[in-house]
Image 1 (tube, rainbow, N blue to C red):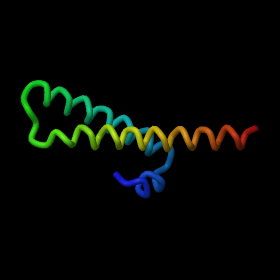
Image 2 (image 1 turned 180 degrees about the horizontal axis):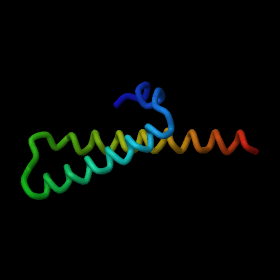
Image 3 (image 1 turned 120 degrees about the horizontal axis):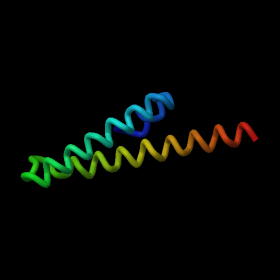
Length: 69
């Protein structure tokens, strides 16, 4: 997922997408622990997507907090 795609999402969509990515990461980790998955770099990509989503959510929360003050 690219940053431009993340910026287009609403805050609710970001939260939903974040929970989806976290569950995907959990499933990938379990699958990789049981037997080697075909593309182990996918785990890294999902982790980075989670970090991007968290960063954007934090940025939006900080912006809304500064607007209220």
